[in-house]
Amino acid sequence: MIDDAQVQTFRQQLRGMLAQPADAGYDAARRLFNAMIDKRPRLIVQCADVADVMTAVRFARANALLLAVRGGGHNGGGLGSCDDGMVIDLGRLRGLRVDPAAHSVRAEGGCTWGEVDHATHAFGLATPSGVISTTGVGGLTLGGGIGYLSRRFGLTIDNLLSVDMVLADGSFVTASAKVNEDLFWAVRGGGGNFGVVTSFEFRLHDLSTVVAGPTLWPLERAAEVLRWYRGFLPSAPPELNGFFAFITVPPAPSFPPELHLQKMCGIVWCYAGDAAHADAALAPVRAMAPVLDGLASMPYPVLQSAFDGLYVPGLHWYWRADFVNELSDSAIALHVKHGAQMPTLHSSMHLYPIDAAVHRVGRKETAFAARDARWAAVYLGVTPDPAQGEQVAQWSKDYWQALHPHAAAGAYVNFMMDEGQDRVKAAYRDNYARLAAIKARYDPDNLFRVNQNIRPAG
Image (cartoon, rainbow, N blue to C red):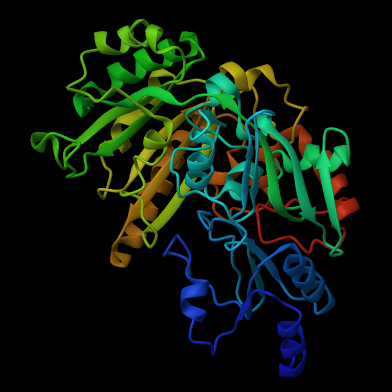
């Protein structure tokens, strides 16, 4: 328990804002991207700088407050907040600095990927991230970072050069391949278990324009397309990435009116190589005769933000996920069955490739252990209508339960809800024991536990 005098003293130590339940801005400050989850923290610290983060961590620790950390706020499981405890909100820490000579960018912990893309694109540079530009830099990176550029440049963590962090004792450290190497190993996939990352430094690559967009097929061709996809993509050049999806075509101007609201299967492509070779790389795709060929040359940030308008804040989400090594014919049949039962416009299933450059990093070189997986599958039950929350959640659960016997061990932590310790351990596989030992060194009391939690060894 903390009294008003303690809170007032704490408030005076901050440059940023402190929101409490009685404050006018509290409900806006506590609102989560996933409206299915409703949490009421005792304190929300909207940090203005790293000093605020240090002060907040020390106050939470001294007063035994449950502590959650929010970066961009996209966490599907609502793990950027908590009931009755403290939220450290990094949303005001949005500084960015591109070093074009060094091919690097430093982004503070509250940045979104759209902000990073805006800053780096001006120099004709980019780094791997996800597929929605409103996603936070922090959460996506700490979980691994799977997206459009993974096959060519690896995961986001494979392009991470250093981090600045506030540890559980309130101290500030830098971690990289040369300093605090064990901590740097752990944050590359280990989530927010080890401290508050206040800034990230990434390697940048020469990339400005991509040939990208969706190709769509009727639902009755889904099994045929999936069988083709499982053979084609692993043998495709690493410059070409494509994630498979079941979708309901949104009634948007970019889609022909006759396709609006139709359930279809599709692949969203990104060719991130020399444009002169794009047609050759994509020829097998066009040979599959999609009913919609949306492939076009575009600036990379345009691709990254293509789904922002569909997946806006305030929708109700339920996620389930698995890693996948093989798409067998029996698994494909189940995908076709459940994909056809999508309950809402926003609900979907995605298969994100994990191969090519991702496989060139050993499974023990970073905390991200699924280097032998081929895809990350995610079953997304999404709706704007809270009355449909149970319906979309049940569809996701049923789909996952049907396909789980065909999956590999574990799931991508950024696609997991609050699913318990066994699922967390499965996600990290043989790396879990080392992560738990590092956790015991840097956070022995498990202050940072509102996450896909790695419990301290001992």
